Image (cartoon, rainbow, N blue to C red; front, side, top):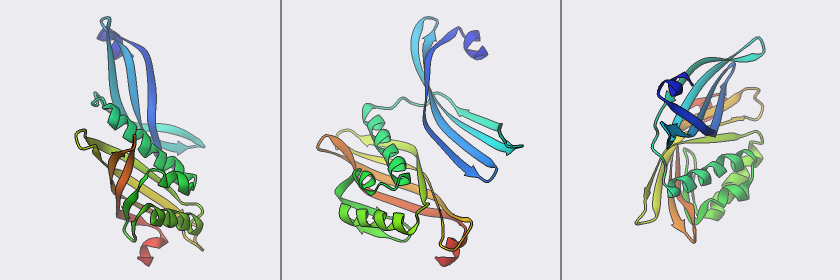
Length: 213
């Protein structure tokens, strides 16, 4: 706030979006986007920043340990905003174990590739998610988009980011966890954006599941 006052800027409103929190025992990492609407010497402006906060739990309370800010992120095009919002449905639907909601993002001929599976077509993808939710009732998964590039002429887009998935293997007390990178190819069809290919590459693994691979 002092920086804004010093530079003769004022804030009219701000919003926090794309909040994601990852727990590592007594440590947590929170990321979010802060969009600010304000005035710079009476001239309206919009700025966008990404925050990375690290917190630790001490004596039953979460305390801030470190914070990093990437300022002046580029403003997204309408297509990028729609794709980012569509992509966020994946996290909500997956963690609610809502098979229909997850696969509503897929084109009928979509291809899904992971470290241990390759499915072609929306119905095969639907069966995969349904089986996964039944076998691992506590499974959670989060995608963090890093970039979304859109070819407006050909109506296709490319999304890349980080991905983390965790669950408790049968008979275990501790979580198994996989981290890696993902990429989604989107296509604009019938008035909306749909996933036509999804690749999830596991790069790190912890827990008993790692020894079963």
